[in-house]
Length: 243
Image 1: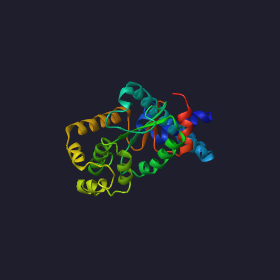
Image 2 (image 1 turned 45 degrees about the vertical axis):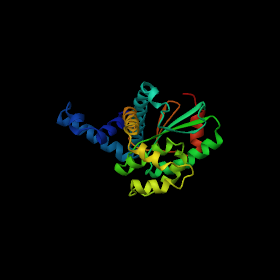
Image 3 (image 1 turned 120 degrees about the vertical axis):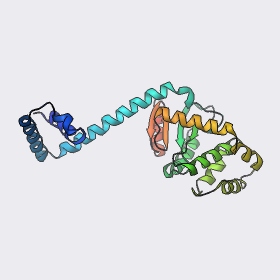
Image 4 (image 1 turned 180 degrees about the horizontal axis):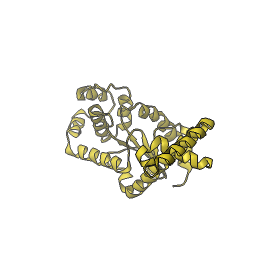
């Protein structure tokens, strides 16, 4: 057998159901093929690694294709909504959508990348859509950032939230935000309790589900779906690519 065929069989051995692979073969044929594969892998251990890499690449491509289709269907939802934070140039021609959770460590690290990108890319517009990946603490934090954003204070509130503990209460958050110049406590409390804010958040969560967001940070750049953060250099290259 050729190496490509054997690699394919190896993938089947590791990832497919044993019944599904061998059910069409007789017992003698099954043993023969298993013996050939075993002998081949013993002599060519690198084939296993190659097969695994090929499998992972195919899986990644399938996810990307599925996400790209979903992105096209949900273009309107990916645009900036009233309760989304917009960083950088509001009229910029380079647009990145970032799904973030305030208590996601990778998201907190990616804030520095976004700051650098905004500083160095004058046409960059970042639309931040907060989603509560980590349950109730994140839900409270996302709502608080949205409420602060209604006062134009998202950036300052986000900087404070980056240092916050997931165990914080609403009173803790309010006390922290009171250190922000121009913060209106009464308005904040009213917005936190409003049905409108929760409706906006539900819309973001529904959008995230539609395009397949399973973790944070997740980015949408030039129609591409990117799971995880990245250094500024890699982001710069993505922004330069055509959609």
